[in-house]
Length: 156
Length: 286
Ligand SMILES: Cc1cc2nc3c(=O)[nH]c(=O)nc-3n(C[C@H](O)[C@H](O)[C@H](O)COP(=O)(O)OP(=O)(O)OC[C@H]3O[C@@H](n4cnc5c(N)ncnc54)[C@H](O)[C@@H]3O)c2cc1C
Ligand code: FES
Ligand code: FES
Image (cartoon, rainbow over all chains, first blue to last red; front, side, top):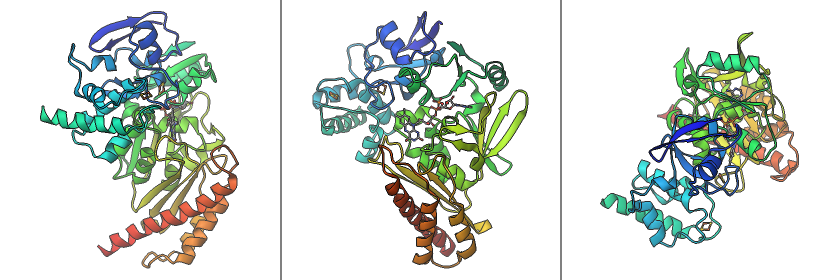
């Protein structure tokens, strides 16, 4: 089947999509957007997190056909040109990125948190990121990055 | 494989009637895991996302009617007042990403004994609204909906349209045992709902038997012996816990042993009753 939807503000379509295929597969393998990572394909790791009509979801659990006519925003769509989003900047500066595999999903999820709660408490940050696994950093630097991004966003 | 995209409820019922072997997909948080891992290769997916009415909830006829496609995140944000037990349970499901997509309708469709929405629906006395093109609407009380491990009273040509839940008239609690705070399937869970008007207490056990179920003897004990004006006696709370534990019929599995689950159900029952009772007395004093 053919699936047409808006990705990061651009109309895209993919042909010959298998009906059981996930949005994650379409993004990575058909549209050449490898930002969203595939680690578990069962909703456990959060590394495939993208916005679907403004709401963060696991792209591996959305059937491709379900996004027909809808809007998707991936980690690739957060930066404006060369200018990184404050969340992306803060992850780099705080050393919250090691192997980087979990990073795109964490950034989308943290981005959503700060859109909804500009000054989150530590408990709120932990709850918001509870569905994103990182095998490298030990999470402390990730928490630092979210706190830094929150303060930067507020200063803007 | 076919991908069916009804845009109205009537179209969805027609599709299910014409192709009963098609698998409905709402949030996809159960269905897609099975497809990704090749556990299931259905002949057709019946996508319900475009049936807008399924995503709505309303108060009708004194009941809260929650559409089958209302995600947990909306239950948490909007229904904590009328449905505190269901909202508490919803907040423990998976992660934010899962709660943004997963639905109570999908939880009912999957009918897992560990589904977190089931105990509060049982405790509150909810009913499931299902419909088929040929036979119309059926209202199935939650207590009759669950038929076995991952089996429900739903017929092959039927779809779940909504769940009808009486709004809380007293305190409600949901409690879940897991190995960490997020992303856990319940080792076991328990829901309680006080119905002060009827002088009755509702219960729901999760992950403690082949199906979610009520602890009927424990409910009867409280109906007979609870003095709604007075503090809860420790002896009555303990007997309530024992009868709830006795209602459990769990198995040993990777998440916990049967003996542990029986014990934990007793503890959860006693504790949630105490929490609810304290709220009840405070409200009376105020
Ligand atoms: C990482 C992860 C964590 C999870 N954690 C929890 C948890 O903590 N607690 C918990 O209870 N569950 C959990 N789940 C399971 C799942 O999220 C829930 O069961 C959820 O409620 C399913 O809703 P859905 O809309 O995504 O269902 P779907 O996957 O779309 O459907 C589930 C089932 O219901 C059927 N169905 C859907 N809609 C209808 C309808 N309208 N009529 C008839 N049948 C229908 C489908 O055919 C399918 O059999 C988790 C899942 C994942 C991937
Ligand atoms: S790949 Fe989607 S959650 Fe892990
Ligand atoms: S940086 Fe390697 S998994 Fe998080």
